[in-house]
Image 1: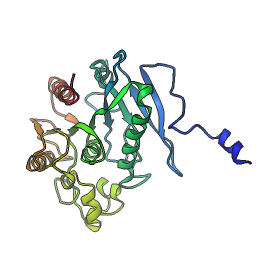
Image 2 (image 1 turned 30 degrees about the horizontal axis):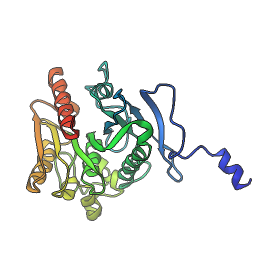
Image 3 (image 1 turned 120 degrees about the vertical axis):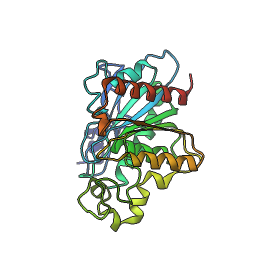
Image 4 (image 1 turned 180 degrees about the horizontal axis):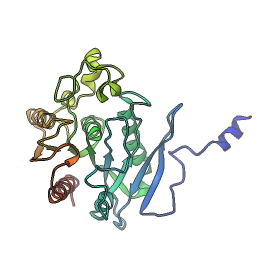
Length: 286
């Protein structure tokens, strides 16, 4: 088979593939990257009606212990919302991208972070077609997705305007709650490909507290005070490190809330979302 025929048979590269046209306001399953030997990586896009003005962007990163999860899932307490959280963000004027990333059963760190960088690169490349202003980007993540969103926002090469971090791990090097860095079976070890204690440099590179720098964007860190999976100490440690570096940060702890806002009232969850949205809007301007 000739190279010309192979090129014709292959699916168009994500950089030039036509955008889906079934619904111009919601694009599902848009390929954004090709991974050698792996599945195509996709994202979902909610696009607001902002007329001729490019919309600011929220890049949402899902949780699931780096091993499972769905790109369009903001957590168990929000799944039933009608309209859903991404539609609400779009109604507030944001474009929302919910991106796949390789899970720990597919590739180890830094692969998922590389994937999110690739998603931002694709969004910047296709921004004129999408009507998106990637210079005004807020990264938002929950749980393991909040960990990756933190690292993404702390990357000096990523022009993030702000970060919304819900109940996320911040340090993969020290014991905290159920996490033991000597164990090779924890979600953190599966992410790194080895017990964190056995790969200290990799564990440090994957720890947001170790990546803080004074030019980082503002952070909103929200954590349940009774979180039994990722103790609130993680959120407190990240906020403290950001403050030490003179980075604007707001830490909100939620009384009675376990992981995923379990145990919090419906009103409290609504207020957490509303406050996070206000923070994001303040970061990107009018």
